[in-house]
Length: 331
Image 1 (tube, rainbow, N blue to C red):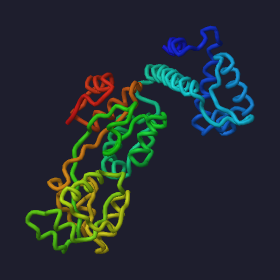
Image 2 (cartoon, rainbow, N blue to C red):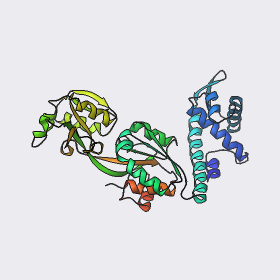
Image 3 (cartoon, helix red, strand yellow):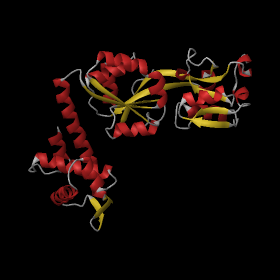
C-alpha cells in the first residue's frame, strides 16, 4: 500500500525503499520542528548534516525545491513542497498503519494506547472506565495527555495520541472522525444555605444577579453558557474562569459567587459543603465525543475502549462511521 502511494505521489519506484523512508521522515520532522534541522536530527537520533544531505538528495531526485532557503538555513515550504509534505504525511500514516497491523496480529491484547482529553473528562468521567479497561487489558501501556479541546484534536492529527475525548471543538476538524459517547448537563453549584436553593424554577435572570465562577471559554460547554445569556440579553459578571471544576467549587465554597460546572464534576458525597441545581433547561444538553484520525488503524482494545465509553457503539458501527469520513451516527 505504501509503495503504491509513493508511485501515486510521483516518487521514483527505482529508489532504495529504506532510504526513501528515511528521507520522508526527515522532511516531516523538519516541518514539525519548525524548520530547525538540528532539532529534527535530535528527534530522529541522527546528525544534522545527515538530515540536510538526505533532504537535498530527495529534492534532486524530484527536481524541485521542497524548502525555501536563506543561505544554508531552511525557512519554510515552497508551494511544491507543501504538496510533497501532504503526500509524505499520507505515506507515513500508511507505514505506521502497516506496523500496527503487524503488532496487532502478533499481540492482540498488548501495546501502547494514548488518550488525549480535557481535565474534566480525565478527572471525573474516565477513572472508573479506565480502571475497568486496565483490568481487562493489563498488558496495554496507557497514557493520558491533557489539554484544551483544540490541543487534543491536534495531538490526534499529529499521531501523538490515538484518540481524543472532549465536548467542544472536535466535531468539525478536517481529518478527524468523531462519535458521540454520552450526554450531560451543566449544574449550578452554591453553598448549602444559598438563596437560589429556594427558587422553584431556576432562571437565568436569577443566576445573573450573582457573580459567576465557571469554565474557561474553550472548555466544558462554556459556549452554550454564554449563548444562553446572550439570547436573554443578559450580561452576567463572570468573576473567575478556570479549566478545573475543583477550582471553581473551591471559590464557590468561599462564598465568592455562583458556580456553573459539568454535572459529572459534582459528587454529593465529596462536595458536602455545596449543593447542585440541574441547569439543563437553561443551557441545553452537551454531548461528549470521541474522535480518531480519519483512516486510522484501530487495534482491538481501542474498539473495546470506545464501546465501554459509549455502550450504544459496537465495532461494526464504529467502522461505518470511520469509513463514512464524517459523523454518520448520533445519540
